[in-house]
Length: 621
Ligand SMILES: NC(=O)c1ccc[n+]([C@@H]2O[C@H](COP(=O)([O-])OP(=O)(O)OC[C@H]3O[C@@H](n4cnc5c(N)ncnc54)[C@H](O)[C@@H]3O)[C@@H](O)[C@H]2O)c1
Ligand SMILES: O=C(O)[C@H](O)COP(=O)(O)O
Image (cartoon, rainbow, N blue to C red; front, side, top):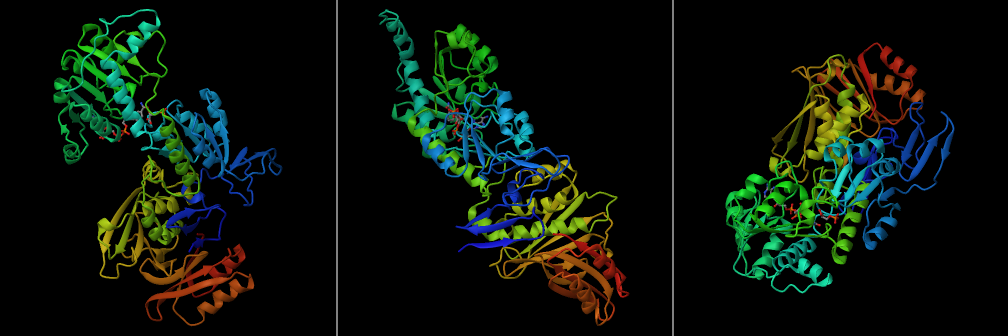
């Protein structure tokens, strides 16, 4: 059964639904995780026209503002727009078309890509499109997800994506076998000079003595990077009778042992192998890791295969090593620059076999990759968290479903807390205390922390915050969010008993919001699936966090509820919840009133003038 939680107060408030164990942030609440900018206009939602903003881009709708009031709709569709910039398998395209408007525009120049991207909610690329910072800047916050139809994400500026709150997903599994098979194809064809012999016979020669090869059986193959592709290459090479060793600083030794492969140091791998096959990602550590120094440590006559990334090899150094005969042959599917210059000495070298980045290019792999990435992108556009997210935590569906009401509570506590701050000193330190009967290891709080961060930052800035950029945005603003988990002795059925947000070293607009230690302190719980505010400062209250909240500190005396209630009733403001908390009888009390509508200024003034009310604050959720 699907259950929905929504808040009604503002067009930018989230509404989540749980369906099939997935936490969905449905329209208009896509904005909760992946709202692309403060100017996002969810479909079917009233359009707020800002004088500063020239273009409001909502999902699938291009809305050009020709004057402050005059709005021209260029498309009636509310479907998301998905730009596919490189060839993608038909099955994936079909899935994308069933969800959004798909624009397949191949071979775009960087400028053309930047122009198109401002109209797109998602971009799907392979390795040929550079998704640079300029692309995210040009998107002006509309781009919510970049899907990489393949494994390597070195062509996507992940830092920029994260800063812009754009999720990056990839398709990490569907081309593994294709890449491994291509590695083996290059290994075998290089050893037997297949490409060179083919070219020579086609040019009219018959050179049986020149193209004598080397055998594979009994030779040592070093697999550099024992991940998905590397381990499949190792398995196949063992089938060819090779002795396989591997180097991978992060691979578990028992997994390698189970495959009959010994994990060794980098130097041992490169100095003992007859063949070296590269399967590591391109990272700052692996960039040009094969260079003059490392080639000189290799067994003379070594043969190298690269189906990983061109950038892991210093290509000039490889040419030198080939010329000296230190490296007898190389078979390369990938290059530092793709396509490589036509006069590249490496490509033209007679002992080098090349293919144009074909590792993933089998019909089967391309269909698989296309479906894998289409599912991930559609899921992300629906507001689901992806299992293949590259720049956001992957939160399992069952955890998401359980945490859904706490996610709402977390954001609302953040919003309430920040509205209690008087300003002036800046918010630097926020502590979140989770009370739970579960073991701290059983409680994944990343999502909650992100939503508290969103609640705190969004009301006071033009930043938009989602799960992707929450930690980054907090750090950038100098906001330190620390977390404490307290194990309490209660039922473990609920994941969390209470969430407390403490903001330290600030003044408060509502003195009673400060606890004894001087921190603004608010605490909430989930009751029957609904978030409740249960503590303000040192006072216990109980008000459902469904609309807005008025907090009053007053002399604890009869008739207060009636007086405030009458003022609100006269303005047709509906009270949804009311609770009074006090420390000492007939002394001081805190009245927390939940209201569906925002009372007008006059009503708020009248509340402030009730003689027994010492202070009050109106908080928008
Ligand atoms: N040519 C193609 O078309 C093609 C196709 C698929 C994958 N690839 C590339 O192949 C590479 C491997 O892909 P995968 O799917 O196996 O990735 P993977 O993440 O499963 O495996 C990569 C492995 O490299 C290891 N590694 C990281 N740093 C290392 C280092 N300094 N030294 C040694 N090992 C290190 C990691 O621990 C990991 O086990 C990637 O670069 C990917 O982009 C190319
Ligand atoms: O990283 C990958 O998945 C491969 O290099 C494949 O890249 P491609 O999708 O551009 O063929």
